[in-house]
Image 1 (cartoon, rainbow, N blue to C red):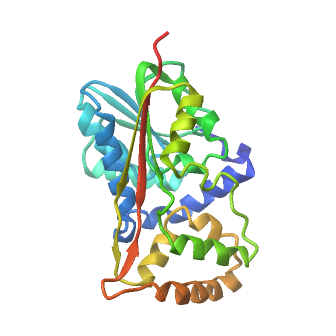
Image 2: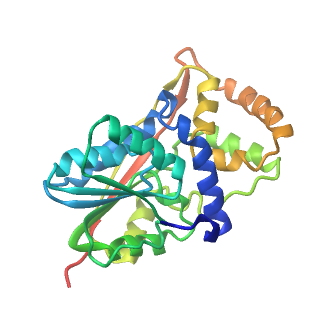
Length: 277
């Protein structure tokens, strides 16, 4: 188990933010996260009996999908820094009566597993929280068997636009600091370069639009409050948060059409193989 007190400031912020967001993480407004995870698992083409590591497992959506692919003869290990996320995942696993998933609190950049421990490593909508994404990928490759795959999903350039740009422009006015890694992996070319640099081969990249309409601006705020955006919102004082919310939603309301508020979810799916010796 990871000692969160020993994490750097960025990881502590991420952990705290997702602990708070965990209870609402599976709400309908955030269904793109479920869709991304399930499609990534399909892309990975997992087989019966495989041992798979699910990084940033969150509430366990990908882990549960993986468990059905590898069947009872396989094994899934889901890791996350957020204990509250893991608690939500554990409850879902218990309700579904799944017995081949183990959950652990782990740092994705400093895994406790031995070299070549897994047939595959999956990370759905999580790699962009790493400040050192190359280092993270190399760590994931380390624990993957030769010939095994590492697969991740990331959001593309148009994802959540134009609301995303409005959000970040406004939070900066409240003194919010944005992680430097934000947006560095939002094109297929950037993903391809990263995978090549990390030493993967047979790299496959697909881009899909998984967007949908939100009914109103309150659903947009629900998505912000129960996802990684919570990390930025936590930097705003309680006294000023309601002011920010009112200002932000007033701008977002201008984007609404008669069909609702379009949520662009351009998603990049990436997979590569660890070379054989």
